[in-house]
Image (cartoon, rainbow, N blue to C red):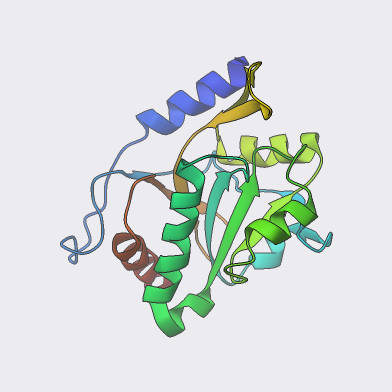
Length: 198
């Protein structure tokens, strides 16, 4: 494991947890991590059409960013489903959110693979790119990811990665991370608050 990955992962896990909103009965409190300005949220990737997409393209919207990969057997599909359901719960407010999926497996996650995987919801913006560009995106969110060999599997390898929903304000600055496992109602409530606050 690379030193920067270890330190980034520990920094994220040790960040202070807080959310003192009056609507704490709806907006999740547990598992909400307030991020420092060391999380820059910068990326320069391509979308499922092959078009270049950078973080600046989404300024003016609250960004919801999730890191995953299309060959993930269970966790990523569930979390992507939560993203989609949260957008449904937001209703008209969903237009103020840029829901972004960044691949931690760019070698397999081609634009074509992302097109197939996200055919169920074209509101979600899947991004991939070169190995170097994908790594730079992860570093900007201090997101941990590493390959794990599967010698007895046709897949050859899987990717261990952190499980977080990152929320960035309308300037593109990541402000919070919600740990994976949050439900769509709670995620939608947090996003609605982020929309109102920015």
